[in-house]
Length: 373
Image (tube, rainbow, N blue to C red; front, side, top):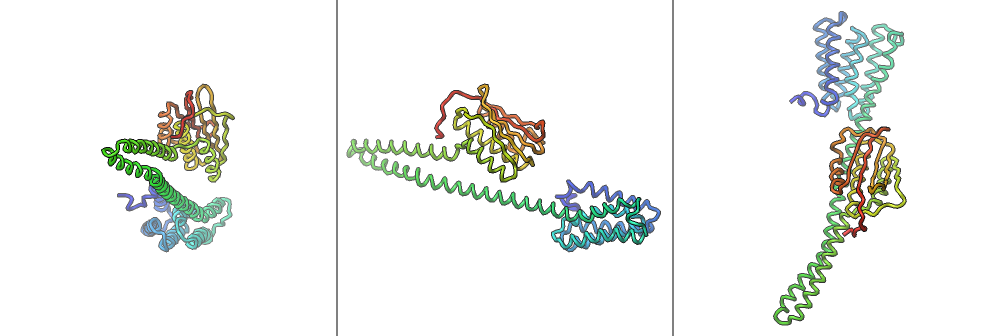
């Protein structure tokens, strides 16, 4: 119910800060001997709260009006009590930065700078005086702060639009893949099944009239059935098999697009893996690369492949921010499940040099390369 009084999307990051600053402002004003009397102080504080509340919920012209009103209130209090009151203007500077208009931000920022100048001129206190020297950099920071918040909010909005666009692309790709599968089924398997149906009808007619002809028809049905089975295997193989080498090559391009340098270290001769093993490892590498792009903020990444002690191991390490929840989230459970299905092991931990390091260990078995079907 509290979100009706305070925006839900700001409760986590701003509520405590706003509450603390407001309490300190009230205490500073009401405990000051130079404040404009009790009723005058209460009236100005009420105007401050109303202005803050309007600026908290509005993003149009009302936001600028509320910021000017609130900053003007702090200016009056600053003239009576001292320039330290203007520090609380950071609340309005932050809210001003969430405006959608650059013009409003420019006007509001100018008002913040003007409030400092008015307080020092009216109180006849030199701004560059030793004890007041701190206020000049504070004024500059507070004046520029709305522009910084605006840039951050704009970047966040663009990121949201990018993620939405990526979801749309993924949906279109999925739809295209479904259409491709449907075409393949219709053009290949559909025709073969139609032939089996027709041959079956012919064989039924020839059973009593010409058993030899019926037998020949049944033989053709058997051949057509084998063809259909082969077509099904080819379609399933095309949909499910993923080459590890191709996935590594794709990862270099993908991370390069995201501005992350990927270095791959692998032996000259790789052991023979089954299609299932290769596909599972490729999917784990794909999931790891996705996590690095989305969450790591890394600049460099290394994939090191080893084949020793009857085990095939892929080490992946980045120099990013590190992992916060090593036991879940970000596709980690799916990687664990895939390696468990193969009888292997999956480990992940913070890298000693910073970032995240994970390993995919697959026990090697003596077998020939399986057909993807």
